[in-house]
Image (cartoon, rainbow, N blue to C red):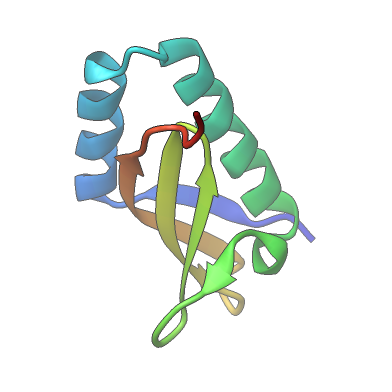
Length: 88
């Protein structure tokens, strides 16, 4: 079963703004592409649940917040953000 992944308007703006501002554009693009592929295949296995039916997932250097609509076989990404890699 394949899900359709869409970006909410704010997430679409976040995507563009964060990519332009990123010092790691290639990694950012790879992370978002992998999120989309994973969400298309098995969205319930991506990230962890939050309040209501929302979920969050992290893949350096980007995090996403999304919601799954099983009845419509659709995933909506509604927020993206970047984060620094932790380490020494």
